[in-house]
Length: 177
Image (cartoon, rainbow, N blue to C red; front, side, top):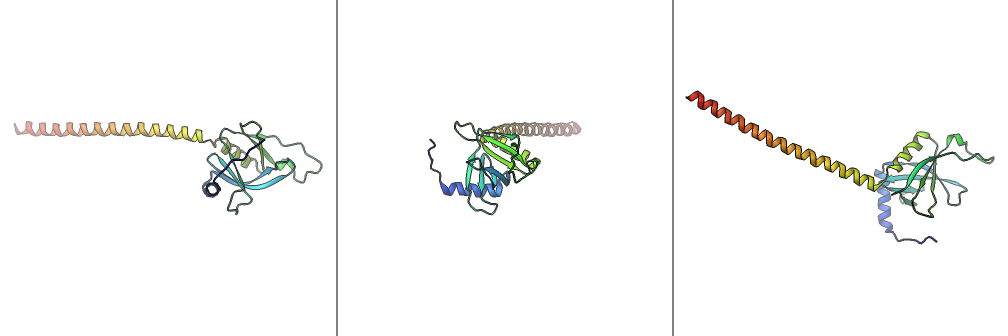
């Protein structure tokens, strides 16, 4: 049995607005309904490891959100066509987001463009705070290394300037003799 958790609604709404504005990936996707019978078109926005969905691109509040940390996102094969299918399946490209939690149903999504589908899959697959933190740490280590090199170069340049000045003084002394 699933139990609800409390979230700060205002905080989630402000994160949703940030995702709408600055999200790494935004656009319309079709989402399979919870009863597996219908596809509902929603506007999605990906912000770091949070996937928000809205009723439309003009909605101000998110309808929901998925926490993507630790999930696996892959392309999925097209389902077998049914006689009552209204939309041609060759124009549909499917992908799933599988969560690592037990008893958590996979999120099934689809697009009408293969390139769009691949871009969503790649974006969601790389939407991990842990990955971002690791990349940030690696960049900081490189930055500190470069700072150390710059400081060493400054010290060497100062020593060379001092040697040149000492050489010029020695030349002037020798000329005077």
